[in-house]
Amino acid sequence: MPGATNLPFSESGPDPRPDTSASSQVARAAALEAIREGTPDQLDEAFADLEALGDVKPDVDWDESAAQELDAPEEKAEMGDTSEEDPFHDGWDTDPFERPDAAMSGDGAADESDDLAMGSTWHFLVSPEGQCEFARPHSAPWMRFRPTSKAGKDAIDDAERRMQMMERIAEWLTENRKAFLCNPDPWLLGCDAWNEFKKGKASVVPGHFMEIAGTLDFCGQSLFSRYRREALLVWEDATMRLDFLFDQEARMAWVANVVVQAALEFKEPLDVLLDKCKSVTRPKQGSERRELARHKIEHLDWPDVIARANDMADTRWSEVLAIHKNRMLQ
Image 1: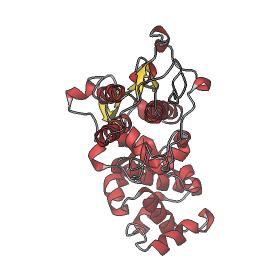
Image 2: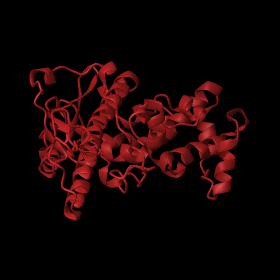
Image 3: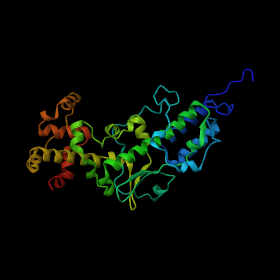
Image 4: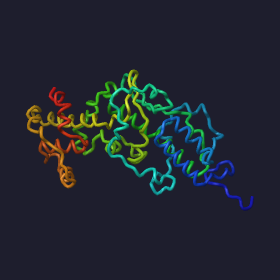
């Protein structure tokens, strides 16, 4: 028809033009927040809102039976732009978290029975053999819809990106932290601490974990913090917040492991070492911290190793000793 203009992303003729009112923009922002941070139920509601706004519509080619099959890694969807230049993302990816949010950190088995409801949390299912699998919802709304606007495409991409990141975390835990999955003791999160220390990356620090585990393929640090919210590690008889991986308890155990593993490598008497270094503190000035970080490992003395490990993990050596000294000497 002369003068007719079809919107992008329309595959079967013109779609209704999405609502562009101020109130609709507020609703889109709320939907995006739920897609990035919310529970499975909240994510469902977000896509229902986007459908009402005209940003997505049901996919007539959706095959419910195909949704039960796990996606092969090579078939992962190509993601859209996630830079902060994108207007739809503006304002929602500008709050990086370098340290874990205490409110989200777990301290062992969860008491809230409601957390076990599949719609209220994302689940990482742990088997007795130490296998971890992310429970991806295979008939999720972003799979049943197709976009009719840029905002709709971004929303679908964000949801899929969040699932792929979660799956990568589960794969990494299975490959690298099987002992912890079999026995959720924070000490076991530091099993490779000395090697990580030498590379300058602590797996118990979110930003470092992203590089070690490869989640940077899916998102930056701000989205990493948002995507992993409302997620649980679920054993047969216990649950734990996923953010326990970055909790202070995990970080202190990592520091203790650095010292134990380094002492073993250099055949240093650990009891003598701990006695000599019990008063070590982290450098307080930024210039001192940067200088310490620049030193090569072979040029560090023991107080420097301990100070650097605590600086990397954002812990206090006095607290690490108070909790872990006896175990370090076992």
